[in-house]
Image (cartoon, rainbow, N blue to C red; front, side, top):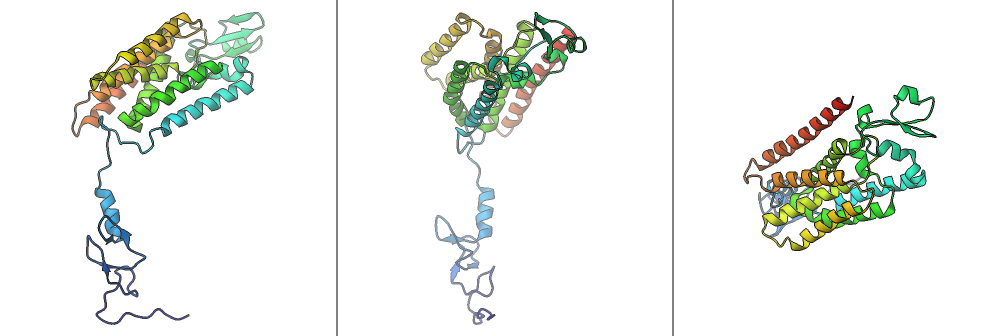
Length: 306
């Protein structure tokens, strides 16, 4: 195999490929570069090392509230919608409201023994011989605090919640950044679950993403208020949803209330955080404190009912 010709003495060669003659220089460092090493820049060409260094030095764009500006603000909401839809499909094909998945995923404060004569407050070991035990948070099914926010039975229920997420989610993610938006969403979801734990009946099952959705409504209200926007249309929309909450039977006002309150508090902590280098630290600590408070309320409720 023939070797490539060696450039004549005094002829500039590529700093990465000494066997290649080069008359083009990097616009940043001045080193000769061959066509394989040239990276197009705003003016001329740069070498790979200078391009990589430039990327390190370029500050990523941030939102008005400190988060990294997402390149695709619909991605997170799309993933959340897909997860909700997947769980709904699984519940539907396994029996709908009678699916065992509902028993496991829906939020129930206290466990219940389901028999042919109805539901009874019976210990798990005694229930196994007479019926089906439906676990609750007091029995250790703490996952229900989260999974209940992804479970739906009625198609109208999931359709309303996912449409609201489709509309509100990208706006909030664009304004807050992906990490802060996810913190808002899941804190609102948990806030709704904790309110159900304390304010609803011990043996009823609660499910749906409504707590998280109401938290998004509250957050948007806070943000519009922060920038001095017109709140009339949003206020009317929230009022209509509150009316539906109390006018339509079998809707958990406790979950809606908890999600709205916690979402509003988290939004206040995010958008009114002091500007500067410590803003992110302040947001992490204060929102984390809300999470610890919610966890403490769960522990207190379980201890009270145990």
